Length: 376
Ligand code: CMC
Image 1 (cartoon, helix red, strand yellow):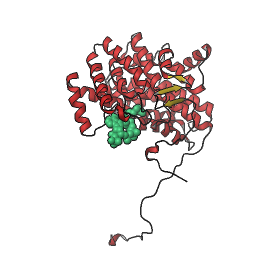
Image 2: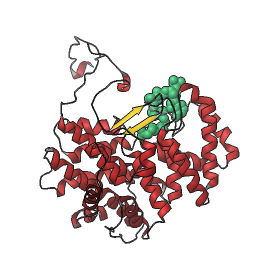
Image 3: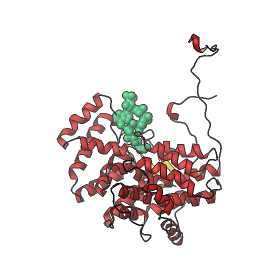
Image 4: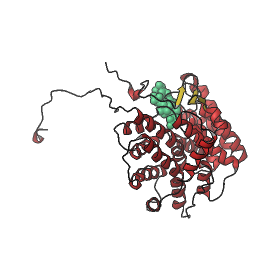
């Protein structure tokens, strides 16, 4: 018997061996490894290898995998020309969606669904998205594009291409940790979107494009920008209480809080909180961190009993700001990371595919006679 679950809450719709979430206990593991351990010890490249292969790489394997990624950083002339033809005022998430979609045009065999070949295509997308994002940001500012440096890891190379200078080791590490923490998260909305698309045996570019479209929504990845907008709207720590109370009285959602799965502190948020505090101190943004901490204090007082805690987007906003990223690049940075998770899920779906095709509960009328136009 079919049952209805609004928003598919509680419905298990796929098998995955990538990430495990215990929402009651606040646990997130990638292939069994607690997320905090990966954030402390791993790199983004190693994390993607782990997600795609179900195990950590050996030394030579990581070098080979990283080398492959770095060798694909550069945009083709055709892609660069498409980027330079975009309106400078375009919102970066629209740019990401449009240009990732366009990568299918450069592929001689875009429709292949053979897993090893799709993996190669996904690796190319993973390598290119930082170049696309940094390139668009410089282009819209009227600055020359910076060629990627294939000696640098993905996170560091992204900041280098964005700013035209090498980031400090602290900033490069912070960016890398953000990418690790955002890489995968069960059957979240964008991942589900990617799996739904590829389950029709459509192509990897269409699946990733759909996922980007899903991620940009303010209830999903777009929340990190919403958090920053909120922080900017609060003049000082002293104004936080009044601001949050007014929002709660209006039944407004506070961005960066709540989660469909977690009823406890999101483990990614705990890690990002520590990172945000340190970076805020180092970059003279302590007031921003203090505002965030005050919002958390109020929300825990008011909403923890309902299971509403900070989620990944809450402290990632302060973290990205301290790294020096402009507000409208926050959600695209989520893309840079989640392409790893989406692609892993696309590979899992293709490995054991069944078309997603749920049912809808029809709530309209029956046996209605057709009314001619002149009688309506
Ligand atoms: N602020 C205030 N109240 C909240 C919040 C919030 N951020 N989140 C949930 N609630 C309340 C909500 O008003 C509702 O209350 P009531 O039962 O009195 O009507 C109750 O909690 C259940 O909320 P819901 O929206 O039905 O729950 P959901 O499981 O559909 O929502 C959510 C999950 C993430 C969409 C929601 O918590 C939300 O909108 N949060 C703000 C946006 C956000 O931070 N999104 C990022 C999610 S994590 C990263 C990612 O996945 O991209």
